[in-house]
Length: 180
Image (cartoon, rainbow, N blue to C red; front, side, top):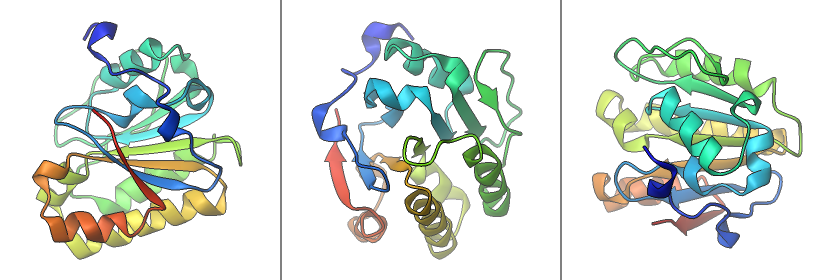
């Protein structure tokens, strides 16, 4: 994707405080990574159903250095990537324990009070997992981010969730941000 296809980075409403969690409502096939403020790219962990190359492109488009970004790829298919981002072992979308383990490994590289965590693909993960189990995983991820004073963003396309499911996951976050 060309950088012109990305939304405007550094949306002022996306400036989170350390330990704050936001649910980013995105249109289909967008990533919250595309909207982060420039400082986020200096110490970022992304758990995503997107290809690592797409994350790298979003970071570059936002003016960041991909070498400062870790990616936990969540995919049912093998993932190939040879770029500068640190990439964890691929995790199947149905392996919630594996996602948690790779997240824990990746979070070790984030600086307390300065790190950012983006988790994209909630709708995709719901296709592979029972809602209650996925809710517990997200509760854990958001809780860890709060403990370590990371800024946490969960990206979701609200059109793929029921209003009840969206409200349930919104409850884990401090606020909701509409990104287009």
